[in-house]
Amino acid sequence: MKWLSSIKNRVPQLSLWRKGDASRPALEPHIIPRDNHPISRKNISDAALKVIARLRSAGFQAYLVGGSVRDLMLGKHPKDFDVATDARPEQVRELFRNSRIIGRRFRIVHVRFGPEIIEVTTFRGSHEPEEAEPPEGRRAPHGVAVRNADGMLLRDNVYGTVEEDAVRRDFTVNALYYTTADFSVRDYTGGVPDLHARLIRMIGDPATRFREDPVRMLRAVRFAAKLNFTIHEQTAEPIYELAPLLSGVAPARLFDETLKLFLAGHAAQTYELLWEYDLFPVLFPATANAIEADESGIYDELVMLALANTDRRVSQQKPVTPAFLYAVLLWPALKREFDSEVAKGVPVPLAVQQAASTVLSDQQRHISIPRRFSLPAREIWELQWRLPNRQPRRVQNLMENPRLRAAYDFLLLREEAGEQLGGLGEWWTRYLEGDENTRAQLLKSIQGRDGGRRRGRGRRSR
Ligand code: ATP
Ligand code: MG
Image (tube, rainbow, N blue to C red; front, side, top):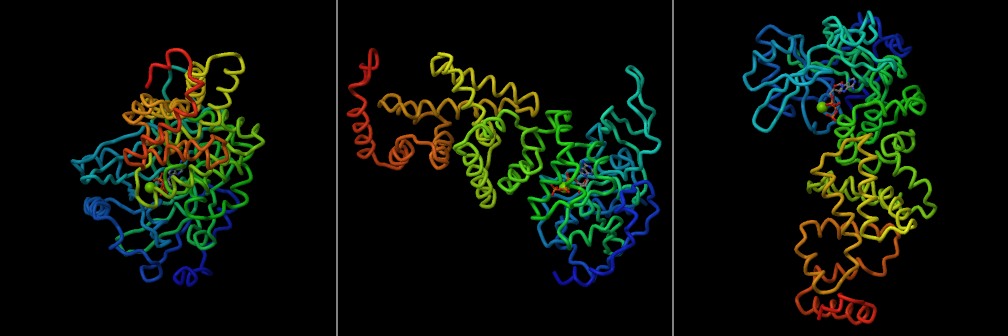
């Protein structure tokens, strides 16, 4: 990118930050004037511009920040716009009727314009002096960050200046500020040269910052996959050791993060990176075990194929559902649990039920899965054992099942991944696509084949 090469060699004195010293925020920003960067107001949402204008006319500072500036600098379309300001949440709230304060860990204001939400955050300050978690029953003094024994930040509502805010952000490429005062971009941490070098680099000491918030490990992977960037060596290094800290993160937050990891259009790449950094087994322990124990590689292939499919659907702007995603991500665990139930002599339908319950409840201890997604995932699984049963009445029932399509897609993935299912996917493809005649013939072909084997009450069907 031309504009980038022109500023490539004019990097601010960042040696300070590179050594991981996050305690000296008196840093002058490197200012990239409007002619030297590609951001134009045309590409910024009107809602974000309105928020910035109103904050500024009320006497506050307001910048566009975060992923939107990063993406605009790269010539991409941001998916949403974040604004940072020195106005306190209550002050922001007063300026916008259509707004509400959310969050506890970080209080932020959501300003709504029709379907669009602009996230407004107050500049965060530095954490000194650091406080341990107060004894039970005592509240932390206002404006103090609270940590647990692992160094994890439990609350972080300390406000500060824009410079302090910059060094509290996660990665250098996420800490660029765009201002409409002179349409320049302000870079306090070396984000612009890192954009050029395509690097995800933690601001400050990586291990400390990962301990403060282990989700940053997932964010590093997510941005590396999304932008096709490399995680800087020193940022990557502590991840292997700190990965287990993710199990201390609230399951509800991990649910949100997994959707961002797998439904944002770069799931296949993300999945590979999660394995590479030892993060996948912390998120999905039972699935990871099943994949590692499976010498055929079929489970891993199934997940990869499904995620590549999901990415394709996202790029075609087709809907993707967390239910299908979870059905895929937990299938290896389910199948393994099912096999062990059957080996114990549990009859098949019951084994499916029990395996599904076990796998879902074990997984919920790590990542919460709302029932509106776990129920359909369960149905997709159960249907895998009903699809082979092709007596006419059963097929008719299946045709009325709202989950048939998803279960059929799932079946095709299993076959594509290498499971031997005796042409079952092909049969269903022809049935679903066929006219009445074809369907009748397909049913007949099955009756002919299975007829002699059916026993007992099954004979009732014609
Ligand atoms: P996306 O393209 O997914 O929206 P984003 O960079 O905007 O990416 P957000 O989750 O929207 O990510 O967060 C906005 C900004 O807030 C980030 O760019 C980063 O500067 C800061 N931020 C978000 N989460 C964290 C975190 N866990 N630790 C430190 N800074 C964070
Ligand atoms: Mg964002």
